[in-house]
Length: 71
Image (cartoon, rainbow, N blue to C red; front, side, top):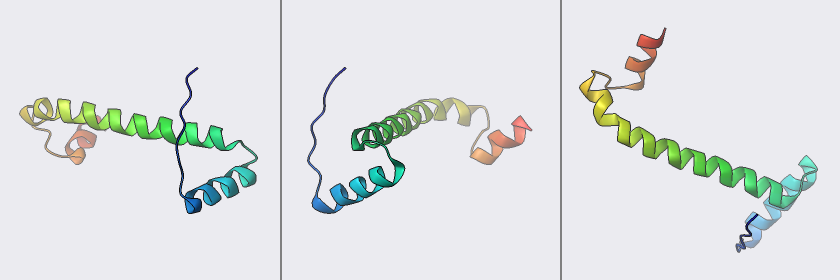
């Protein structure tokens, strides 16, 4: 397992501490969860960008086009 050290401004540190206390979870667990979500979002955006030319060629110009064909 790797280690990451980051600096937080005072406001973010206080918000994180408050959230951790309320959730009864360690700050590091909350930070890992947030980082996992951000990585997943960035990966999704990359994949979407790669797929976009193929989708447009197939006539999918919006999310609504995709969902229309799914239902």
